[in-house]
Each structure stands twice: as structure tokens, then as C-alpha cells.
Length: 376
Image 1: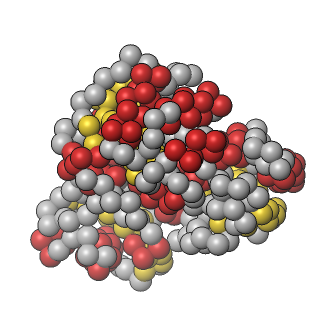
Image 2 (image 1 turned 180 degrees about the vertical axis):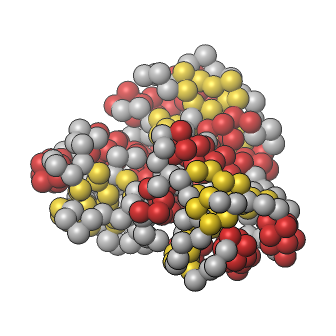
């Protein structure tokens, strides 16, 4: 686990371009004794090979394998650019993380950072950080970036006879998740839920909330409240900016007249509606397993190549590291792919769902066999 300190971070920096930003980071790494003189050439050469921009306003400049012998100690230096730096191709960087790694240690660093930095809206939160402690909290995952919403917060076909019972159940799910206390439960029960249309009701409160969370409950029988149908109740416990994304997605569904899709999804599919997670692949999905043979694993460059291949196809493509935690991620997201922490010899299982799924898996397999831009 990477341990960040205030000494690793320089706030309120500015740079005329990415070359100046990378050179400044290399200077910091050298000054701290993490690398020897000359490492900057490797960092600039690596950037010339392929952009180190990850997305979400973040770049991870690091050296090439040829300059790895110049690394004296694994570590990072972080420069914060509230005004942003043009990283090319229309990308703006607010946080540049200069990495020095002696071997595959950089994969652990990337895995830790990308799991945090892949959250929606994190770029703006990074830009607005005004203390080193706030940035460390964000990078260490101590700052909540996405609302809690999983199957434990969902109860479908509950035997309720009125909206009040549904409200109590939904509030109880959030309390049981330890995201809110009794003050929250009392407040949402006392306040009337709002009717959003198409049978969906919304209840929300910020009282007694310790973590932003959603819950969703549907009745087992037809219910009317104020002469309107009650097909389901969505409850929001809000205490931070993590509530913005689910509310925005809900507003989009209202505008597109698609609230009914909430009632058509099962408990396993519902969390994907309010997060950037992909729903579980269908039974008809095509699958294939490929072994990564890149000597230094799936770091930024080969990861970018893999994502580029996946993006060429219309099919939804998920991937899991069979030597990792077993969770599937979107194969078209560089952040998600790098967060898998894939090392040499790890096996990746791909699941492609769509009209061009077989072609997608074949192209991915060919790219991996060819070394993902690094040779066999």
C-alpha cells in the first residue's frame, strides 16, 4: 500500500505545457533521491511513446524500462495544477503523479490510485483541493466519491400495503448499512415522498447521514398513494457530493421518460443504473481467456492499447483478472483496466455481449498475443 505524506505533494503548481510539468516532477524525484540524474529523459521518452493521461484530469508520468536502473527507491511525487495543464489531444491535467518504480511495484501504485481516481466527478474534486491533507484523503480513498448502492440496499416485491411501509423498509436498509442513524429514519418517515411519475416515488434526507447511500424498494402488490400508483420507492441519504451523480442520472431518466426501466431490472442489475459499473453479462455473452505475457504486466502503455482495441467494437466488453479479486470491469475504461493490477502471467477473462462480440474477442486476443505494442 502506498503511503502518502504532505512532503509528496506540491499544491497550486503551474506549467506552460506537459513537458515542463514532467521535467518539474523528474526534478522532484531526483532531489528526493528516488532516482538518479537522467531519469527525466526516460519520462519524456515514455510520454513520446504514448500519452500518460489516464482520464479524469489525471496523468501518471513515469520512465521507460530502459531507465528503470536509474530508480533508487520506489515512490511518487505529486503536483497539483488547479488551473490545469494542456496534456495534448484536448486533455487537461489537474493532477500529475510522477512515478519511480524499481520493478513491478508501479502496478500496485497504479492499482491503488486508479481504484480511487476512476470515480465520476473526481477531476473537479481534485481541482478544488486546497490542502495536502484533503488531497491525501482523496487519493487514499478516505473521501467518498460514489454513493453506496448494492444488492443489500434493494428489496423487491416487499409485502407492503402502503407507501409508509415501503418508506420504513427503505430507511431501514440504509440504517442497516450504517450509512445513517435513527434521526434519518424519523425524518424520511415524517416527510412525504415526492412522486416522480411512472409509478416511482422519491424520499430523501440529510439528517443523521454519515455516508451517501441509495435504497430501492418495490411492493409485491398494487398500491395507490394520493391516487397515484406506487410501483417503487427510491430513497437517498445524502451527506456529500457523491449524491450528485445518482440525482443527475435520475433526472436523465425522468427527462427521457425511462423511469419504468427501474422496475424491469433485477436486484443484480439495478446498481449499474446509478453507477458507472456495467451490468452483469447476459448468458449469451461470448467469453475468452488470455494470458498477459508483457514482462512488466498491464501498465499504462499496454493497457491503453488494450482499451483502444476494445473501443473499436460496439459490444459491451467486460474483463476480470482471474488472479485478482474476481470483479469484472469495463474493458473500454483505461482507469478500470489498470486498476486490475495485472502482472506478467496473469490471465484475463473477457466477456463480450453484442452483435460483434466474436470479432471483438478475436481482435483482443490477437493484440495480447502481439504484446500490446511492446512486442512478444
